[in-house]
Length: 423
Ligand code: ATP
Image (cartoon, rainbow, N blue to C red):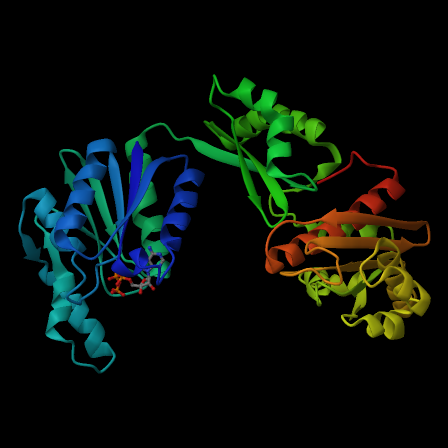
């Protein structure tokens, strides 16, 4: 079955709320092996909702609609469905009684207009709402099946899982699963990742299973390999050779899979080596320390950090020599290396990790915005990385943090002599 999604709500069009229901429904449908072919958003207007429903049913076999089932004037999804079905709304007395019982149990008088929630298009079936008041609706039309679900996310989640997924799977006949594997990379731009994987990607296209997609963001690129098969293990078998080849082509840039984040990988590497790290940072103002404390249990490997923003603080708190600062200024490779060394010593950590640079938007003492130096200092020597990062202040700072984490990761991997081992 081909499924389409339709989210109803003027507040979605205006950007007051984000359509997280569509994202959630998309993930659930994919996990159930059901094809989502299109998703749309429409405002609270009977005519436009009805048009969107008709258009969806022209293309798909099933339409999942969310929102606009409440009791207020602008909740008109039921009315639109009745119009599309060409049937009247009929009050369901059992639901009506249930609604007033709910209010009575709370010791409240139900506003009369709430009874609207008991009005269903003739011939429709009510879907019980375990988490709220408005029931959902399912109706069979010649063009396909339509489900109406509440907009409130937790109500929608329960109803969709209990009443819609089993129904759609029964219609689909042959059960199938979709399995995805995401390779996480750092240190390569999206175009570079795509270029390395171009031939592999092309070789997948004729069969269309598995498929491959790139998701770039936050200085990292994720490569998602998705396969569809009769069951999980068959899907995994389709993914395995593609994953192996992608890993070979991307090499050390692959740091993890699925929800394995860069900070987590780093903590694991440090723990493996019974090592700790401390930070000394300037342009990132604490973001590097924040990244290293995101994971619960980070204290096993992260000792602390110094935010040495002013030039004097680099000298006073991180022990960067006044001569070096005078000669090279606060933004240089040697200053970064001295900051890393200072952080390492100050916290008695195995490794010191440092960042200095110009976040912008304007140049600083002739150094252009985006100039960043990351450095690591350890018992086995150090490493520095000079970067010229693009974007605005926020992006430069975020990219700097990712680059510093990656610098330490690569340093530790080299040390462990297992450059190929990732994930
Ligand atoms: P209610 O019975 O509460 O009125 P409803 O079915 O009428 O539910 P809406 O009035 O459309 O649903 O939305 C209720 C709330 O649910 C919205 O204020 C919003 O917070 C949330 N919501 C609605 N649609 C979405 C969506 N597509 N994605 C995420 N949240 C949503």
